[in-house]
Amino acid sequence: MEEKTVNIDIRKDLFGANEDAAALNAAKFKEHGIKVFDIMGSVGTGKTQLIEALCDLIADDHKILMLAGDLATRIDADRVSSHGVDTVQINTGTACHLDARMVKVALNEIPLSDYDVMFIENVGNLICPAGYSLGAMKKVVVVSVTEGPYMVRKHPLTIKRADMIVINKIDLAQALEFDVDALVRDVREVDADIPVLKISAKTGEGVRELAKQLGI
Ligand code: MG
Ligand code: ZN
Image (cartoon, rainbow, N blue to C red; front, top):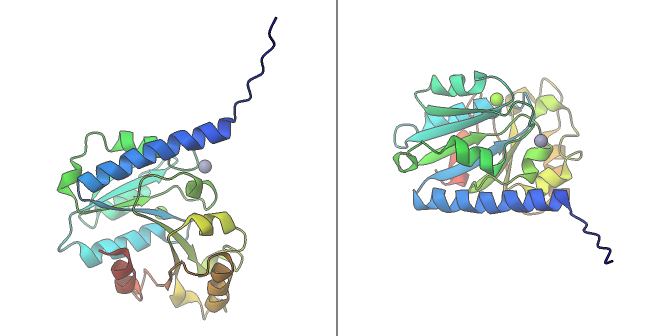
């Protein structure tokens, strides 16, 4: 008899399927003329605050949708809703990142052509969200001065897969004796060309420049 062995690379198949779904999402976003940004970063880095600041800046002339990924709560979506922005919550249960299919399902009933911009706040975690494309125009990684000096060095793959790095909470750098330029140099070690923006979502410093770089 014939003896046959089939080796299946589950990880490869999973990622491949996600990339296909992400490409479909991207095509749909383009068709509806909506600019989509995937905002990634660990818990407490200020992703929601950054989205709130951007919404306040552009809400007058953009219709915005916010898609929030979270294990169990609506806290972030509710915060952004309070700025008059439409929100969709995805509760992932046990999944520590969003994937392209979750985004597709969550947007099923949403008339995307009603919106100009969508911010996706990914699950608070700097490791696996970067491995799952959602179909966004840009992957924005947010780190902040409150997370200690090694966030970039410890997450090189995430930095590599990002399109832009935002260093948030620079208003606290001096009080915490945090060397923001050293963090920028860490980014440069991984990627010589990626845009790095220093901002304070709280005071608004750098937020206008961020919006400009995002093209919104
Ligand atoms: Mg948040
Ligand atoms: Zn995960």
